Length: 571
Ligand SMILES: Nc1ncnc2c1ncn2[C@@H]1O[C@H](COP(=O)(O)OP(=O)(O)OP(=O)(O)O)[C@@H](O)[C@H]1O
Image (cartoon, rainbow, N blue to C red):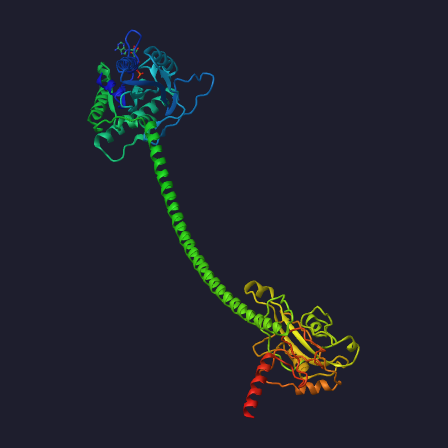
């Protein structure tokens, strides 16, 4: 049987018996133990072929058996004697095949197992007694054998079905004289066979619509009748001349079936395997989409990273520029500080040299300057009267200082002068202390301005122009030379040189008036001792002009010498 071999090759095969009732359809399909029917022989042949191909192919066989009785599907392999029959429905799978969910599929490995199953199913099948057949089949019996094949060489899998169908016999209701339940069964049988005839006619005429769903039988055999399967039909006819009409009908039906061309049969791949491959393909597609999304995300992150790197590079360049600028500014400032220190050291050296010369001349030990000094500022003949109130640091320094340790304080003229009311020429030294911010930037020596004045200590209300000027400067925060600007952060230190002039209270004013006031006044203004030798200035540069009662300064001394020369030359 070549058609049976096709099942093992992966083709769907359908073998069914059609004919008048009592003509031997069941006998042909099932047979007897002595004369095996098509079902047994087919399965026997298939098992033989499976054994022959065992080195190449591996098969698994599953047997299902059902009947369509009165347009109802019933599983014949279920022992439902004690339970009501479970209702089964035909469903179309995703692969386009018709499946009956819940149908028993018994795995068989040999012919004997199949035979036992067929016998058990046949016992359950609905039969009835009619005038034509004592054990007439009142239903369509369908035996489905599923073959799961796997090629051991290439791994190809197939899943094919073999349908072995024993149709109920067509019969004339009036002739067989059935009533009641048998009449109803005959009507359903004739209706389903008529639907089968319509499907065959539609398939033969190649119409667009094939009425498969007009009956459970045609619906179940849809893929076997009009699909890509191989179909074989047995036509059972009666040899009796009385059944000539039914015989002609059966032959006409067989002629239509023979005219049906379904096209080339195709191998049926394992749909489960195909479904698995489909799932793998869908998963690969999904993974590809995810990969594309991740690639887009990575690309956007790379763009953001590149943007941030560019921004960081620009910031680093800015920082580098600022560092270079800061370094240049530091260099410039360092140069300026070096220049300032050099000039200060030069001036300090000159002043020290002058002081050393004078000390040598006076044979006095030089005063050891404890701190670096700037050139003495120009001293004006204005001196402010210290205010009795506001005891701040600056004002305190203006008050008469009696500390003998202060280097700029003139020594007292004698103990006899203590307690006497007399005008004393005083010199105020104003020291400037650099603010912390300035000290951190530029190292500048403490500045000191020496101011000589004469002020009667007894009368604090009297003010000389110098005092008024000092007061005014204190108010205006401007003091000394024009280039000397008052800085509140600095501390002024004034020291006074007591004037040795024993003058009256009003003589201070006269003395001050007699003091030459010019744009270039001497740096130190003090009163010389009243008697030569009685007073010796502590500071060598401070010389008081006693006779003229003027504040003495080296510059003035130089000017006086020049004027004396000029006057001598003129005389
Ligand atoms: N070729 C045959 N050789 C011997 N007996 C046969 C043969 N064909 C049929 N019979 C006998 O005829 C009787 C009816 O046969 P069978 O039941 O197979 O008919 P049927 O077509 O299936 O009827 P129904 O359609 O009503 O089921 C049976 O008793 C069977 O043994």
